Length: 231
Image (cartoon, rainbow, N blue to C red; front, side, top):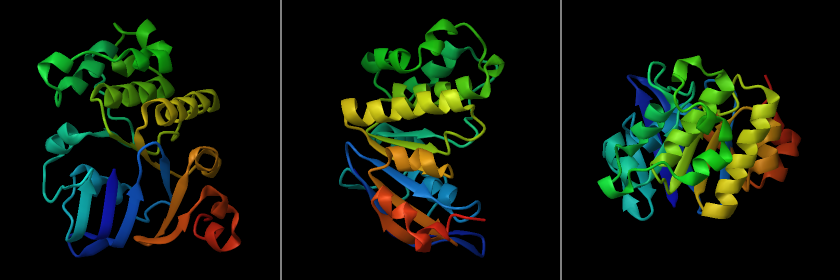
């Protein structure tokens, strides 16, 4: 579903990504791990079109994305859950979910039933303002909003950040359900090692803007890999 090949990315003169290559397949969870500041979010920004790349290629389902705008990538099937959630605090839960209609044809503009099956709290709070929800509920809302777009590739940037353990488990169950039942390709950036170890089919570890390991989740127990994840 997604192939990233030999990507370099710069912010001015500072290079954030160096020759980065990875893939995400349908029906699998691919996890990208690494310490703060190693380029994980920059990689996602390149994939969703928020930051142009200097070199390399990003291909979604056989289509070279080139310099396509983020909204066109959403139309092609990329659903993005950003770090910090970025929900609209003054809109209701229902209105936040409906913002996911933007890339859809008019006939497809509805909230899928599985959004409420995965996150029943959202159905109970449809008329509440997004800013009145807890951090964990806002994260569920952000994931739900991405699912409204009917993505083929779901990209999540640190969905467990600042979330209480009970909701982390709910989010983990939801991600596993989406993989198993809908066949989504899921690309997950995380720092929570155990969360990735439980969910991931394949992991990539980044350090200083480069991929330093790729393989099965079991490889995270290798001391040579762990050294890139510890502070």
